[in-house]
Length: 292
Ligand SMILES: [Fe+2]
Image 1 (cartoon, helix red, strand yellow):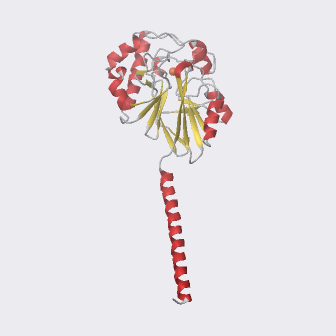
Image 2 (image 1 turned 120 degrees about the vertical axis):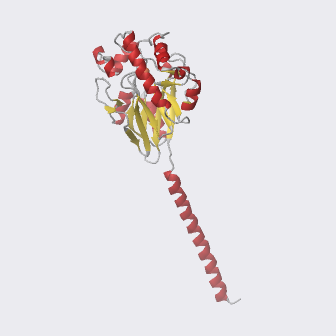
Image 3 (image 1 turned 30 degrees about the vertical axis):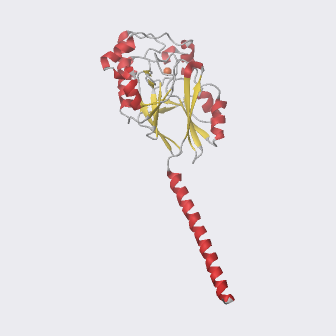
């Protein structure tokens, strides 16, 4: 075969190989672009032995940002967890004013230059950004929808993440529900009934979420914030509907359930609640039932 012809064939083969490589790179890029749009989330549950509390990290790796929900203890735990994933904390949220443990939200928020967030109407004595029902908090590409769930406390919020899973704070636990008596001021039975009705309404809203919605509560077994919660701190709405006794009660029975066999107050309740309110003034705490 003439040399010239051989050279032309070689060039054509090389050209085709280069073209195939380019196509493959282009395809890879397209795949990356497509998968880049698929919902990606960094999600971590922190279980604290002390008070059987749960805190959460919700992060968007594409944008390198994160939210921390219901932090307890030292900021360093959350800072190192987020740094590990190259995330920067931009939101620090408390589901409600806690009564059984000192919140770590203010300290963490200060460390990261954020303003702590709480449900609207929280009578706290420090600067915070209120969250109202229906608000959407964007953490990069992640969307956290606020569901106002009064009952356990007036300002309590649950957080629905990407219509996939819900952080239920002290409204709904695995196998249990929140209690309505953890306030600094004495509440008579009429007052407790009103709060129990509010909690019942809030739970109905959560039960309206799709069965497959994952449930991540604020406490697990061992906590004084409920009566008989499970030791497993993950569930789904469907499983709770099937197995959680409190959710099977009608309104009247639910109210009676909340008023009977009330567990003892958490240790050091008074001091903790005042510290989390940031005022030390009990009048700043839950006021009359029309605010619940
Ligand atoms: Fe609580």
